[in-house]
Amino acid sequence: MENATKADLVRGLRPIPRKRVSEEVAARIQELIASRNLKRGDRLPSEREIAETLGVGRSAVREGLGYLAALDIITVRQGQGSFVNEPQRLAILDRESLGSKERRERLRMATQARCVLDCAVVELATRVGGPQMLAALRECLEAADTEPERIKRAHAIDLSFEECIGDHCGNPYLIALQREAHRYFRTAWESVGLMPRPASERSAQHWHIFEAIQSGDAEEARRRMEEHFRLQALASEK
Image (cartoon, rainbow, N blue to C red; front, side, top):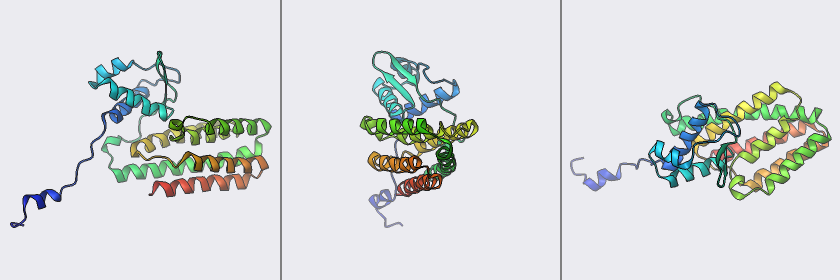
């Protein structure tokens, strides 16, 4: 050890990852939405107000708002401001106190809960849904395929499809549980910072699920939804 040079010692240090200011801004805005219990359509403070309150530049605020807009949490309207699109819940655990391993474990559990509910929902909806459900699902999938690339990159297109199925399952309690599981999934996913699989892959799987629903095969629809989650889990492990 005495013969080790300073360069050798420094080489043993690993860099500390730096968090981008815009990511912290996005997290603070989410906390604001949750703590104030803001609802869909509620207006957020202006860029200037957020920048002054947080002590950051307006460019960082714009980036943070853009990140939340890509996740479909807020809607930014040119010349009007930013509005809540998806109410938030305070995290079950303080994400700042969690290490990378713990965050991934929380994502695994949130995904597992989402899978259980979405598979139950698709099986029930296939059994009780009718032409109105099929028309709504087709419209949802076609709209997702034409979304801007920034929206396709987020997981919102997956949740929208699954929630559209939920809307036609005929069980309001199951719908409420599905929505809550999706909220926890969003929080867990965002804390890990993973990118979803390519939109083309997810879209193909959605249409595959739709075909089973359209044929009225509830067990096959459930199996295809389970496969959808299995492929997602494999991608998350990479």
